[in-house]
Length: 337
Image (cartoon, rainbow, N blue to C red):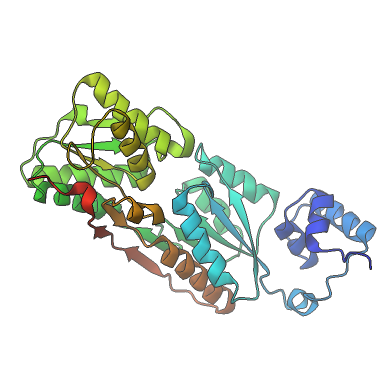
């Protein structure tokens, strides 16, 4: 039996995204004539007939959700996307993942929109700049933001300021007075808010901030939210000949790299130095790592649920949700007697 031609085959032959094929099938005006001609030619040559989705196409219902993320190889985004995947299986929808990259994600996202417009969109951890906002206003599709907030869109975002504050407060309450922080390589509103919360907590509790205890790794991968960056930051602290009593890492991946580097130098956590992370990825539990839970899986599910609701309902009100950080205390920050 011959293999049935699918929308994916058409997209591959035409050199476009499946969302663009969907737009052409739906007779959308948001496709250039040149792209439309390529898709129609591919449909004809492959003898493609969308039988299963014929009713949906006729009613112009959403078929393809695009999920834009800076990366899908980190534990954080793996957990978020798992929530999307587990929720979307209950919906009559497909989804595609677009990796915007951590290096200039805004520009890459704009290029993605130029290739073709999906039926609906979830945008993870990308700042909604004025050019992006202007472009999104021109396309009448449901949009949900995650990790950034903009009053014109449904959004879920984390209270990163409070997360940084809670982290520093916990270390202070354990009795530490020389406290450092590993920052990401690239600055963003997320990292800036966490650092500001961290600094404000130290100030409020009367703990001096030693700028030599604030350090970033060298590796640019994942914007510095990586194991390599965490290990490099420890090496930099050693080169300064200044080591804090406790160290707050901007995420769990940095913390894992930092612990490895400390162990390789003969230092033990928490006996010689306390270490805490941020995210509460799965492995942190098995490494006894104190961290801040961001409820990534639940956020992925919630964003998908909201997008599905907006697809099916003509609602005008915006849905704004602030996720509160939850401190997860484990042995890595327990101060030795």
